[in-house]
Amino acid sequence: MHLVDFRVRITGGGTEATTRVIIDSTDGRGNRWSTVGVSPEYRRCQFRGAGRCDHAGS
Image (cartoon, rainbow, N blue to C red; front, side, top):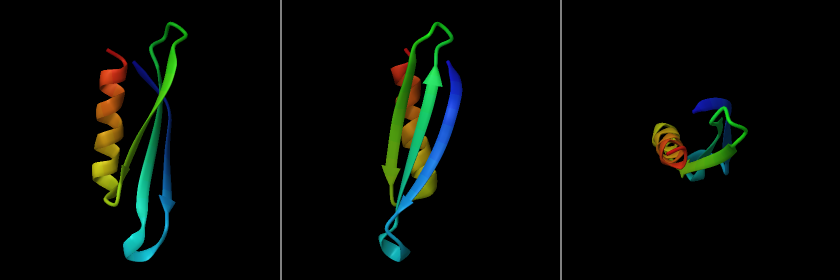
């Protein structure tokens, strides 16, 4: 599995802000997919997206 793109979007603002992380991956055989992690906490959002990415590639 290889990382193709990693994007971060912040929606809202102040204490109402929400972070969305979009991770695009490929398996090197032409298969490509995206996973999304959403959380009010940036670090938690990254781990949610990455965790889904690991399972999607299995």
